[in-house]
Image 1 (cartoon, rainbow, N blue to C red):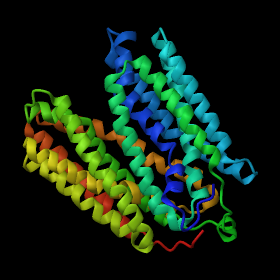
Image 2: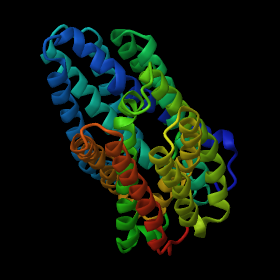
Image 3: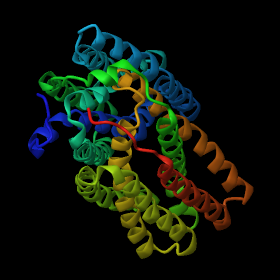
Image 4: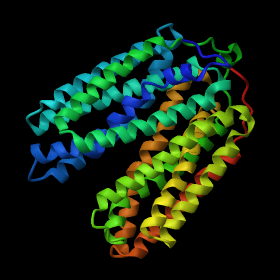
Length: 397
């Protein structure tokens, strides 16, 4: 399937189908199923065991996409479709998940989860480059918005699955959904690249700008996501902090899903001003983070979460489209998207360490959380406003 400038929404939805099981897997396993499995496999030291595995997963996510992306670009240039690499990764992912479901020792569980992580990373790296290959630049905004919505829906479903199913069942369901979703990859057909784009490298200015912007925003997101449950328990004194965290997350995701597609469509119509949408989207995110610090009450928290979600939806959809606009050369798009992905994974490693140190410095008091929310607000403001430095002088492809 090649997606032209006036493609129907249905075709763009089909292009993004595979994002849903990938997002569902990440949410269900990392947040719930894997930690729960550790309670059975390493009951005496489950925290330390999970910390080691989480670090190994992070290392794979940080360092594997770049070489896999470069390999995907090379294979693409030699005439091998990216589907081959994406489907190979999906097969490794499914195999790892199925084996993890029956793992009886911590060592075997480590090996199978790392196998699944490698497969997921390989498949995702090749897949995300298939979208700009198949979709016309004029449709990148709406395609990016649908991708954002699929990611959000997958996250909600994944958290639901992880919360309701046993770890073994969660692994098997994720394996089945990934296998089913990978079928959609066979329908993606690359468009012809612009000859001029294959001939030279553009400057790296815009790419560096969007990389910094993404890293800053993800840093703020990681601060909130890591400690919001403890905020409900320690500051709001919620009787069920998990429930409060879940409702807050759903409110944020609801706002993000609505905004993601709408702002993606808008950005295609005013493509030269896509960076303005990203910059403006940072305003409600910043206001929400400040609101958490100033007015920490149950009712206002959920309103702030919805407001935050609206801004996040704009950043999620248009930020990815802006990253595609900023690729130095489309012939290396998989490699460069792999490098851009480091802006997501590295801050998510650093932010919990910084946030934890801040909260400990203030002895777990409200002032510690206030400082954390203020830092998150600053990160959102810096990240969203920095995209205004994007030059945006990219030709059509």
